[in-house]
Amino acid sequence: MSITNKAAVYLNMIKIEHSIFALPFAFAGALLAQGGIPTFEKIFWITVAMVTARASAFGFNRIIDRKIDAMNPRTANREIPSGKIKLWEALLFTVICLVVFVYSAWMLNSLCFKLSPLAIAILFIYSYTKRFTWACHFVLGIALALAPLGAWIAIKGNFDWDIIPMVFTVIFWLAGFDTLYALWDIEFDKKYGIYSIPRIYGVKKAINFARFFHFIAWSFLVLTGIVFKLNIFYWIGMFIVAYLFIHEHRVVRPDDLSKLNIAFFNMNGYISVAVFIFTAMSILIKV
Image 1 (cartoon, rainbow, N blue to C red):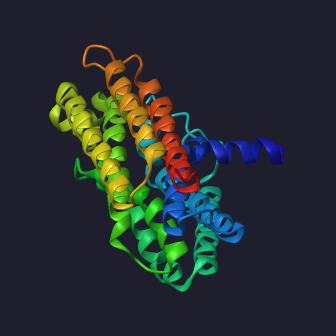
Image 2: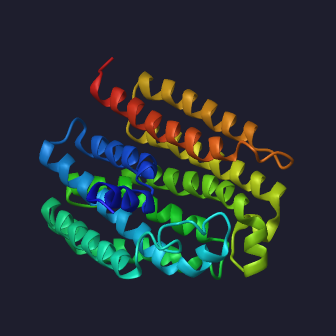
């Protein structure tokens, strides 16, 4: 296998396209912390930290879940179960990503470096939670919420409560669409004892939970705008985000899950990008 093809396999293993969920929130957090555009150096190391943290978490998850993935028809063709990536290769990849993540945290500031082991622990614990609790969706949400929180600390060098509404936005937003994502595997989860909201509460209640989580997420976005006194551009964005949430839940119904992929990837990708764009407009364009 050529280097290019091998690289493509690794990128597919970590679902690099799903970076669209975390990176915009990280950049939004950085903009809010700076009150403008951060230096190129800060943006560079925040990006490196985000990408490598996420890659190491995905690599670890694929390693831990390799036997479960092999039994699930939907995931049996993933890179480790299918043999496209050997176990030792996945381990080496994960370790390298961890080393780069810790180094990038050190390059940002001392607090980021000191907190990096805690961030790693949060990122890795998710892989085990779905074995014993339906709250695994929230653990994954907390892991992704490190994006705006970490970016804030990277810019400020300290913690501040102002960023917490956006942190909770990400937690509930992720919990909502990860609950929808789990609908794909509800029968497999029942058979093999994997925990998720759909498996415990059924399809209809799971969809209602997801809708409720997303309403809470949008409410925290509103609170973010109030806390930071963002201008009209942000509030226009919030109307657009509300529409995207509503559309996402219109296309997913208990009796029709055929558009689940559209709801999971497309709509939530648009939501994260919209939050970043309209946050940036509000900060950079004075009215």
